Length: 143
Length: 143
DNA sequence: TATTGTTATACTCTATAACTATA
DNA sequence: TATAGTTATAGAGTATAACAATA
View 1 (tube, rainbow over the protein chains, first blue to last red):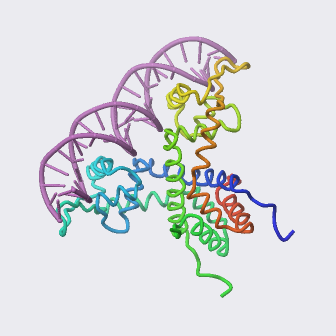
View 2 (view 1 turned 180 degrees about the vertical axis):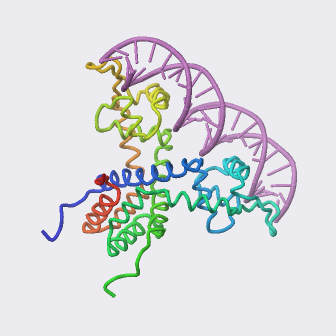
View 3 (view 1 turned 180 degrees about the horizontal axis):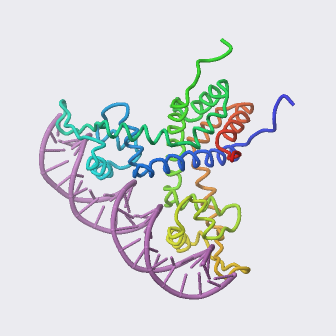
């Protein structure tokens, strides 16, 4: 019994679907509790690390550039994001998260109890294991 | 060096977000190539294991029951799903996937190359590890 | 010529509320 | 009374196509 029965790909993909669905549900619920849609919350998260151009945000959200206008309009109206013209290319608009926006992303992350509780069940060794496995599966290294 | 540096929770949650994005993008793209939205594809997947009542499907999709009517209308119009009145409770409508619907779910699963390629990088032992970790984190056992 | 951001349009998803037919 | 499914409605996300400003 050095090796458990083989876990086949279909089984793993199904488990991934369930697991990531649980994560997404947790995220969506936490976002909703702050009156944000999942896309809006994802946008704030993307801006958390620094200013991003409209176009780059569309790539990050995997959606068409035309959608970003509406999403940012709504976030800007609530004072969670600011538009800033680029100094180097006058076509470009950079997006900057405001302190209010940062605070909300903190609140959302704090409210993701199900995911955090799940992660808290892991030992340090298991956390490292999970990180390495996820990186191997999902981090693009090929091509 | 028996133990790598500790992986903290925020780091793991960020990695989960990235992983989810990659998986969801792969799934959405595969569904789009069959002219289905992600919700429609998710619905067909849910029906793959057998008939499901409208209400139960709403729970599976984590959405309000009123949304299911429209989603099923569109799938039914394309012949991918069939409505069937329940024999035991005349309020209930059971949903049955058609052969065409089954074929499309197969095609979608087959087209999720990025996720499958990622999983293919793992050894059998790692697959078992990943399965166990995901189950520990996301399978509800508490309460 | 190509790119950035916007607008207009149409479709889908989403929740809320009100309705009907059953239970 | 409560539940299953539907309809109507309004807001948000989405892609496509066309546009002005800039590169």
